[in-house]
Structure formats: C-alpha cells, structure tokens
Image (cartoon, rainbow, N blue to C red; front, side, top):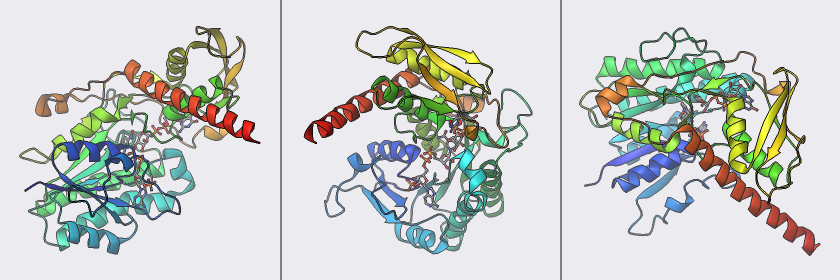
Amino acid sequence: MSKRALITGITGQDGAYLADFLLQKGYEVHGIRRRTSLFNTARIDHLYKDSHDPDAKLFLHHGDMTDSSSLINVVAKVQPDEIYNLAAQSHVAVSFEQPEYTANADALGPLRLLEAIRTLGLVDKTRFYQASTSELFGKVQETPQRETTPFYPRSPYGVAKLYAYWITINYREAYGLYACNGILFNHESPKRGELFVTRKITRGLARIVHGLDECVFLGNLDARRDWGDARDFVEMQWLMLQQEEARDYVIATGEQHTVREFVETAAHRMGFSVEWEGDGVCETGRVSAVHRDDIQLSVGQTVVRIDPRYFRPAEVDSLLGDASRAREELGWTPRIGFQQLVADMADHDFAAATFDRAQRAATTCGQ
Ligand code: NDP
Ligand code: GDR
C-alpha cells in the first residue's frame, strides 16, 4: 500500500514542489488549504485530479493552523504516515505588522499538530517534519551557521519559529515521536511568492523591460543571503523523514550573495547591465548597457530605487549555511547553483511579462 503524506501549506512554494515530488514517489498526498475568497491553488492545479477520478492521488482538505479542530479532524481522517508542516505566515517583514497572528500560526500551529498526533494515538505511526529556518540564527553568532550555532532571532517570525523548533524537539524527547527540524536557508524558484526579494526583482525587472512598470522599489541592497533552489530543498525534507533516527539538519548551499548582486545577475540574464549611484540609503540602479536589440531600455534609465518602507525594524544582515551534516549523513548536495536559479526565475518572469504585455495590447485594441 502506498504511504500517505499530509502537507500543510501545500498551496505555497515548497508545498507545491513537495507534493509533486511525493506523488512521483507513489505517495497518496493530502494537503491542507485555507478557505479563500478566490482560488489559491494555482501552484498545484497541474497535479490535481477530481477526487471522483479513480486515479486521484492528491486530496485537499480545508483547515487552518490557527484552528485546532480542523487540524485534529484532518489528521484523524487521513491517518498520515508523514506530516510535513510547511504552513506559516512566512514573510519576515509582515511578521512585524502581524506579530500575534504570526505567533499563532507559526508557533502554536505546530504545537496543535503535534498534540493532534499525540492525542489521536499516532505517535508510533506518524513522522513529523517542521519547516524551521535560518532566521533562527538572526543576528549571527558564528559564520557559517550550522546545527550547533546559537540562535538569536530578529523578528516576530523568527521568534515564533524558535518556539516551533523547540516544541518539535520536545515532543521527540518527551513522547518518542519521530519529529525533526529542517533548518532551511532561503530557497527560491519561479513559484516563489511575489513579495520575497528575489521574485520581486525578477518580476519587477521583467515588467520594466516590457514597459509595464517603471521601476522596482527595494529596501536593504546589502543584505546577504545563502540562496538555494526550492526544487533541491524539498528532496531533503523527504529524506529527513526516511532515516532510522530523527535528527535536525541545516540545509544550505554554502554560497552567499547580496541583494544587489541578485539584481545585477537577473538584469544581465534579461539583456542589460545595472550600475549603482548613491549610498544604500538613497541609491538608484540605472541601466549602464543594453546587450539585446529587442529590449527597449535606454542607458541611464533608473530601474531600481530605494524605498525606506522596505527596511526592517531589525534586520538579518548576513546568512551563510554549512550543510556538512546533511551532506555526510544524508548524502545530499544541491544541484542547482545561483546562476541557474536566477536564470530560471528571470526567464520565467520575462515570459510572463511578454504575455502580460500582449494581453494589455489586445485589451487596448479592443477598446
Ligand atoms: P509560502 O509563503 O510560499 O507558503 C506558505 C503556505 O502556508 C501557503 O500554502 C499558505 O497558504 C499557508 N498558510 C499560511 N498561513 C496559514 C494558516 N494560518 N493556516 C493554514 N495554512 C497557512 O512559504 P514557502 O513555501 O516558501 O515556505 C514553506 C515553509 O518553510 C514555511 O513554513 C516557511 O516559513 C518555511 N521556510 C521557508 C524558507 C524559504 O526560503 N522559502 C526557508 C526556511 C523556512 P496560502 O496559499 O493560502 O497563503
Ligand atoms: P527573508 O526573505 O526575510 O530572508 O525570509 P526576503 O526575500 O523577504 O528578504 C531577504 C533580504 O532582502 C532584503 N530586501 C527585501 N526584502 C523584501 N521582501 N522586499 C524588498 O523590497 C527588499 N529589499 C531588500 C530583506 O531586508 C532581507 O534582508 C525568507 C522567507 O522565505 C522566510 O520564510 C524564511 O524563513 C527565510 O527566507 C529563510
């Protein structure tokens, strides 16, 4: 009989890739989705078959991380072999605006799931994966960061995830549950949410090139991140639940770039170069050269501006991970490097902007 997995956050970036990965491994996959006024399943629609179809392997259930009753009901109904807890209010800047909700969903949410497993008598059956984060390291105490590096979170999101990290370990130690944390560094993809900086850059630049937007507004250009590819990282989430003993692992590429470098690399992929003027607080990125005949940008045109709105009350300046434990014990190494990641995201958003421009032209002609 095929294994049964339950994914919270299945409609998000990682949830979509993980669902695809597990379906390919022959799993029956169940996902928790929130009730929304518009469809929120765009990332997984290609995987979905109507539940009346005898070949259906993917099933969705309504639920919310802030609602114990929905979580208990779904866990009781599905009786999963594995739970991947990916659901979260995952935007660090937004967590300063919604700290209480973030704590409810990101800290108490995992507790609710762990309690569901325990009270339903599933401790010996169900394995639990918690989506922990490099934001736990925050104001870093050691570089590179590994499993033993002390934590110092710098946002309501990071603090909520710290609770989730420890409650996962606590249920492992107290009840013998197979429960583990993947401490994942930033990972991106063409499915990345549009308000995270990488996607904001690739989407923004593509729209500027197509004349749909004038400029992209960013915050701290000097922030450094260890950016990996989500398609590589979901495999690790599965591997962590297939071991003899549950353990926590850092997942990272070991390579670091600034936001500024991300802009330069994405621009280059789309056919132009950017030069910077100013000092990081009042700075602009301007087109310094155009390498393709078919894009209408002029040298000197401003494509990036700073908006102080995007500076955070407390910033995480620099993150760099050391995934040696994962490499040695799980045999994992990332396959997709920084250049390839940026190229995939840039190409995807360039194509989307081409389509949007054509749509706009068609609408205008029809008027
Ligand atoms: P996304 O923001 O793309 O997806 C988050 C998912 O959680 C969405 O499906 C969202 O639903 C769902 N969700 C949010 N709030 C609730 C709630 N109250 N109840 C039920 N579902 C909810 O995140 P990612 O896929 O990028 O990340 C997955 C997990 O990994 C998150 O927990 C994140 O914090 C963590 N993480 C991510 C990293 C990254 O770089 N991507 C790095 C380290 C950790 P909806 O679609 O309706 O909004
Ligand atoms: P992060 O990702 O906070 O690391 O959290 P994000 O892409 O939001 O920010 C990365 C860095 O870029 C700087 N930045 C901006 N960020 C955003 N969103 N928008 C901007 O305009 C902008 N300009 C500069 C930020 O200040 C920051 O330093 C992500 C999320 O996926 C978390 O859920 C996850 O836990 C961590 O990665 C690891």
